[in-house]
Every structure is written in structure tokens, then in C-alpha cells.
Image (cartoon, rainbow, N blue to C red; front, side, top):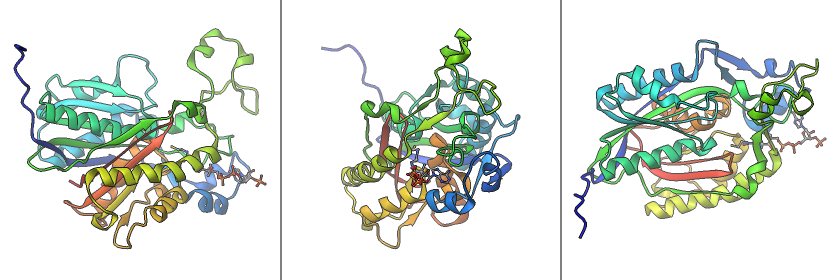
Length: 343
Ligand SMILES: CC(C)(COP(=O)(O)OP(=O)(O)OC[C@H]1O[C@@H](n2cnc3c(N)ncnc32)[C@H](O)[C@@H]1OP(=O)(O)O)[C@@H](O)C(=O)NCCC(=O)NCCS
């Protein structure tokens, strides 16, 4: 017989507030065209993207996270002291240790909240949301701050015509807290590590320490380049279109709802053609609002879903209480989909 008392969590969890931060600098396709042979028309028609935001020196991962989180905390109507855990999903915080989450938790004014980073690429928001729900139902935190934040402009090779136009910077955050009814469905998630090479960093950091320039990427003038994200665009595109629509359907089934019951669809903002294809495969009815934030935000990886959610609510295209399907997918390859009630 165990002597351990059972933990007392909430019956269910829900998203209570959302906030976003987009860097001030808006970068149109014309700027991307300075370094690659392409056209505004090609970029728009192949990806849907017309502008993205790039962070300035002051717009660090921590700064953008704090801005987005402050809004999410205010939107949830709680005080920073009530946040029991801070989960930051990012691939663009450049110190191996410590996690950026602890600095964010401190600067926000939490009371020594548990804080850690996760690396789950463009599925990072869904992974964080799933952890948050678990903590609340299990009872180790009453309110959890989940942040998706990226400065992908630091990891973009502007001379790579396969990726230069895709990525953007920003932060999105949500507060997850207790609920008396289900408001975050079961997560359908997973990984396909056999495809790990399809989205990856050009060179690992340790190669820079060796100082052997022959192992490092060089720009057109022969200067050593910072590592960048590289991908097999077509392979990723096919995987996203065929496999992720199935995962999205499984998330609907797991939540016990049909496409007709949905109000909003917020897929990872990677490419508008992937979004269109998923809408078609899932046979989403006309009344479902589809997030197309990619057009003016680009792909911000872990930040993309909360940023898109924030914008839909801010513009009135979606409203509090709406039922939304969210799905993230990317480097790993990893994915996570769930149905949520919007804050
Ligand atoms: C990157 C992506 C937009 C490229 O579109 P695509 O239709 O697959 O393009 P392809 O690589 O097949 O290239 C098609 C043609 O366009 C050309 N092309 C490639 N990049 C180009 C560019 N930036 N501008 C103009 N032409 C370009 C190619 O050379 C090729 O020409 P060819 O037909 O004469 O050989 C697309 O593959 C994609 O979005 N993939 C998924 C990206 C993604 O979501 N990644 C993150 C997941 S989290």
C-alpha cells in the first residue's frame, strides 16, 4: 500500500489568455530578392508569404517572450505571481545552458515558478500545451505559461533560395489554467526520426569550435557563415500534406467532434499551400475560419500557432469560446494536434 498522498489537480485545463509579439521591422519579399534569384510572384504563389517580421538587436528571445507573456497574463486576468510553471519552446536561444525560461520567469515577476525550455521545432507549442495540461490536471501548477518564441532570421541563410523567404521572428504565449469542463482535447502527437535529416541545422556548433574552415559553410565572399536551417522542401511538403491531415483528423476523432463542430482551424503557419491542402483533405466546411497569418508573419516555428491565434481573436475573425483545431509539425520530424476552446 503506497504511503504517498494523491496529488490534487483541476478536473480539466483550458487556455485562459493569449498574447503575441511581432518585431517592429516588416520585411517585404523585395528585401529577400536582394540575395536570391526569385520573384515576389514566385514567393507569394509557392508559399503565400508577402512579408515577415525580423527582430532588431533589442528584440531578443527573452524580450519578445516577456512582451507576449505580459499580454497573455493580462488577457487571462491573473497576476504573474500565480504562474506556477513557465515552458518555453524555441530552437533559437543560443546558449546551451541555462534555459531561457528561468530568466523569463524571473523578469515577469513569478514567484520562483518552475521553468524549462523544450526543443520540438514547429510542433513546440502543442508539446508545451500538452505538458501544461498535464501539470494542471496533475496538480503541480495552477497556471502554466506556455511560450513559443523564435528569432529564425538568425538561422536563415539569405543566399539559400529554398529557405530564405520562409522564416520570420516573433513570440506567442498562452496561460493555461484550471477548468470545470474539457477545453483542451487529447493530443495526438509523435515523431518520425527516420526523417530527421529533412529539416536540420547546416552545421552543428561543435564544428565551429574545431576551427577547421573546410568544414564550415562560407558565403559568396568566403566568410564563415552562422549555421542555418536547411530543408528538403518537397519531401517536407509531401509529408505535411499527406501525413498531417491524417493526424489532424485523429485529433478531431480523439476529441469526439466532426469538422462541422469546428469554428476555427489554426495549422502551423509554414506554407499557405499546405494549409489549403489540409483544409481540402479534412473537408472543412465554409463556416470554419482558417488562420492564414503566414502571409504577413512567415514561418515562426514554435511561435506560429499562438501568434495566429492571437491575431484571429484580435481581429474578431475568431471569438472567445470558439472550438479550434490546432496542429504543429516540423523539425524532428515531430507533430502535435489537439482541439481547444479559444480563450
Ligand atoms: C520551399 C517550397 C516553398 C518550395 O516550393 P516547391 O514548389 O517545392 O519548389 P521546388 O523546390 O520543387 O522547385 C520548383 C522550381 O522552382 C525553382 N525554385 C526553387 N526555389 C526558388 C525560389 N526561391 N525562387 C524561384 N524559383 C525557385 C526550382 O529551381 C525549381 O525549378 P525547376 O522546376 O526549373 O527545376 C516548398 O517545398 C515548401 O514549402 N516546403 C515545405 C516547407 C516547410 O513548410 N518547411 C517547414 C516545415 S515546419
